[in-house]
Image 1 (cartoon, rainbow, N blue to C red):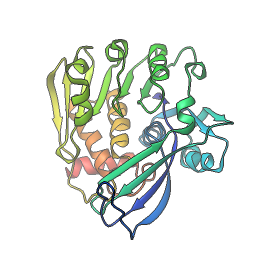
Image 2 (spheres, rainbow, N blue to C red; image 1 turned 120 degrees about the vertical axis):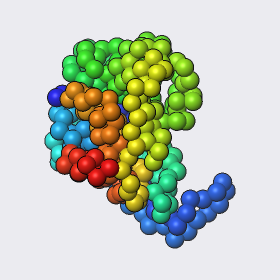
Image 3 (cartoon, helix red, strand yellow; image 1 turned 30 degrees about the horizontal axis):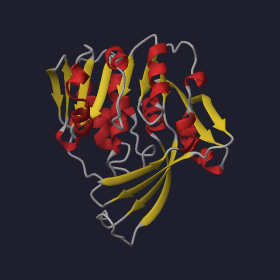
Length: 282
């Protein structure tokens, strides 16, 4: 199974704090950690851990943070030949605050991610494709237009996209906030739409009609960062493998739940055996 991910690459600076600050408030007593991140990189890494052969197309800066951001993917064997180095812009950075219950607040400085252009893409993208919206929308839409196989569009963070993208995607994944942003337009294309609802589970729709629902296994959440990306990778892998909608949703919910039990976006990505064990428990 071959998957190309066109997406963002960040270094995450994570402050684990006693609680999340209110607007204008300073909260002390946090501990700081650095992890590879970015939605594109997270989904590429998670899909590789679940058994896919993954290529990533993206952009980093010519700085020390780039090596940190790419390290885990390189070690795992994700194909990084499509990752270019920008000599002017820095590697993207995400500033993340996490409370003891795993809830987070995230601010992203996109850096080189915003300089990924359609010219960086191959003329044809073979196999399956996963995209998100942390790159320029015109680049995302160009990638979708050049895809020859299955397309998963994780429309996060929510932003206006073309009708062509919505109609071309075989699978759209959004959370409840993003689903509200897009409204009925999500369901006009005929592909499957998955709406995630955190600990409450996820639902799959086709043309606005619910076709499957699943809830995640009970876990003790530590850090929700990356859980959504693990879900996107898992639902894509599951559907490409031919799992039925109910089974695919259970698999993806379990992947997201396991990811939430560990800190860091990429370090938390689960092995396939862990996901299957969680499905069995749940």
